[in-house]
Length: 353
Image (tube, rainbow, N blue to C red; front, side, top):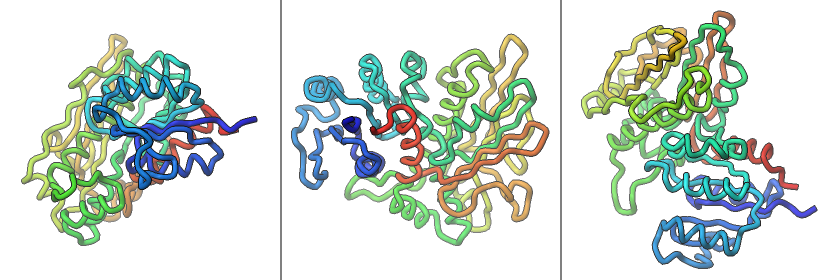
């Protein structure tokens, strides 16, 4: 039996990593495509097999796929997570209509266009959109019991986790951000430009909001009975002064989010602080879903300090339903962590042989 033919959409940090890894699993990589053109299968350093007339033109890209690669068995979507999700959603709708399974790491489509993706949900693997290698989405689906009160605590952004861990170790914010870019936990600035620490940290706070949108839609849809609407999950604007506070050398902060069926305050957290997140969903049957979080002080040796990930880009999910809490911790950012989740979805949806 011939190996399954796969396409990779995106050739950046994630797509470039997925390419050799997919081959090592036994898939036949038939297509690698980015916004500029079709990448040579011997590597991007060999140039492009063809380039598009207009960079990032999705209809032109899909025309090429329909003409020359309509027989793909599986697609890895490794597009950047910024933007409104429209580009990735267009790809998902195309492959969905052709019943081609997809594995995605992009957050924006699931955060902003979930309703359009629902007809194809059974052939989309999206565990890599939230929590990297932590597997937060399947963990919550498998372990939460909605018939009982629950509290879910999350460290859900690996880049924020890494940056503040670096500051705990004595690095400046500038150095910590530079190290995050070097390790591919954060996107680099355009060539010739200097990284803007405030913009990067604001972007990562917004990233938390996107992930929470996905969690609510993917895990809590039946519980609250509706998809989150734009603006339901509010992320406060991170100010320069507050960023200085939470990244000071004497600060010991982590970005923590709590989701609960009732309100239980986070310890040493200021509600509504810059960069924080909050939401309230209420249903006609009396159910509530309360979300709040942001930069929390983590005293050394405290209860929270015992489960919060320390060094590296760690993510964590902790479920408390009145018994022994359930905890899962793993790397939440970087190509290797992201690929580990993409690989699991790929092997479930379309094994290579």
